[in-house]
Each structure stands twice: as structure tokens, then as C-alpha cells.
Image (cartoon, rainbow, N blue to C red; front, side):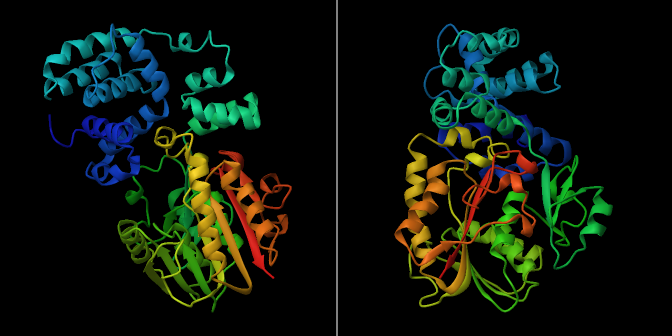
Length: 436
């Protein structure tokens, strides 16, 4: 079996998510080694298996006389990815099973090839609705039917009810369109739309149908566009950078919002992009180079500390805070399985420290935008409410329809909030604050 077999790469990516808790994007380099259809196949198998993992897991367990021994991670990933291919992709059952068996035969688990064949032959015949049809508990039923961890299903049902939870989960299971942001520093959006046959989205965005690999889209090497969801694009627009200003972008890597801020200021602002991850900052530098963005100083620093850029304050500060990511599950299905019930509170505590530190960097009359790709209240509206209650010198600067923001995503408190799929965007919370 060749080392760049797309099914093997997908299997190993699923293993690293489920066994090690690594993000699926951590395997981006290995996927990139593949070309064309092989790359697309590997990515679809890996992402799809994780999207429907709870159903796949339940079906496979029902077809085994006893559970697999602990540590048989490769065998389990082979079974899961093969069942996904047979049930959700246009791959004939015999082909999916044959490929799985061949992968096992060419591995240290070779004696288990017959077992894999037998389990898969039975699993493809199972009606998965039997896993949840008899469950009276709505959270348990939704978790299995729509393939989410039960702790998250229980959390959402308790907060927003069964109907809204179902709608949120279904939206999270739908693959998102590819939304690009045209880099107005070097490209014209109309020309780019004509070239890609895309559709305009928002002020700077373009949705591309059936795009294929990102680096094969016209204009990639010339820096004409960045991949950025429409909701994320609003973070930069609501900050409103202008030429001549000093701007701080915290938790900046890999640079989607940094490069947008530069474009919005016409390349004439002084932008400081801060992140504590050297690896992620390498990606930011690569994006700055590809997009030909001037005026950005890249700084290694922890957003909760005051030891980076000592003594400096700024006209505008963007906080793209680390979060649970529950609003971007449709793009990153691995998030479902890499989070736990304690994470929202844990992340909220970190976000609070970052917000406090960021506020100290804003000049009087300056603006701070806080953004998270999370649906959890303690990471969004509750975070802002607590901050404002503790800081009477700060006030909310309302998000308005006059800025072009759809009325449907403006909250009663005049923040920006989207559920996955609303107005074609990911789930996001954005609040804009002003120092009196």
C-alpha cells in the first residue's frame, strides 16, 4: 500500500483526533502531500467520519460480539472510515470493505482482516435509527441521531430547548460553502468573481461553488484572496480601522483578520499582530507574504500578559479570543469530540483575563472588538456583561443596520450573533466596546 494512500491518511487523521485530541487541521500538511481527487477524498473521509462519528460508533459496536481491546486505535479508525464511505459516500459497499481489508492486511493488525470484513459486511446492513428510536430522553436521542456528544446536547437542550437544539445540530452537520475574502489591496472583487464564477457575499466576500483545492483557485499565488467566513469578516469591519491608526490584533494567528484589517485601512495603518504560538505565527507570516500585506509587525506574546510591546497603547484593539469553537462545527467537525463539558467555563476564564489585558491597551476614546466563534453564553454575552459591570468607564458601541449588518444577527443588546448557517455564516459572537 503506497505511503500516500488517501484512505490511510484519512484513517491516521481520525486516529489523531479521537486518540490524541489533536485538531484535524493539524494534518493539513499530510493532506497537502496528496493531489487533486486523492486530497479531496482523504479530507472528505476524515471530516465525514468525524461528523457522523456517534452513529458510526454505535452501529459498529452493535455488530461486534465484544468490544475491541483497548489500544486497537488503527483497527477502529479503519472500521469507522470504511463504514462512512459505504453509508454516506458514493462508494460501493464492496469497494469500501475491500479497501479497508487491504489496509489491515498491510498493517501489524493483519490477523484481524477477516474480523474487519465480517463486521463491515454486517454494519452496512444495520438501520441506524434503531439506535435512538426508543430513547425518551430528548438530549440522548438528539446526541445519537445527529451525532453530537451527549454533554453538549444536554447543555443546549437545557438552554435553548429541543427544537432549537435540533436546528443548531442539523446546521452544524451541513457542509459549509467556501467563503473567500477578496484581498482589496491587490485584487478587484468583480474581476475575481468573473474569473471564479463565484457569487458576491457581504462587502468583500465571494462564495465559490465546487472550488477544489484552495491553492488551485485562480489568484491564490498572487494573493488575491484569503479563506474567511462571512461572520469572521465582520470582526474586522466592526473594528473599523483607518489609515494612520495604531491597531493591536490579539490572538492574531493565522492572520485572516490581521490581513483584513490591513486591507480595510488601505495598507496605511500600523498593525501589531500578537500571538503566543511560534508555529501559528509562521502561518501568519506566510499569509502576509502571499497576500502582500504591508505595515504589520508580528510579535510573539501572550495576550494575558503585559510584557509584549511594553508601554504601548492603541487606537483600536481586536480580541479574537480562543474559544470552544462550537459555532464552527460545520467546518471543523472534530471540535465535537475534542471538547468536554468543562471547556466553556475554562475558556471563559481565559477570555476574561485576555479581555482585561486588552482593555488596558486601549487609548481613551478608542475601540475594542471582542469576537469568538462560540455559541456558548459565558463566552459571549455573559462575558461582555461581566466586563461592563466591572468597568464603568467602558460602554457598548452598538452594532447597527446602517453599517450593513443584517438585522437578523443584531441582538437585543446590540451585539452581533449568528447561529451556524444564519445569513450563510458560521456561528459567531462579536461585541464592540468603547473607552469613554
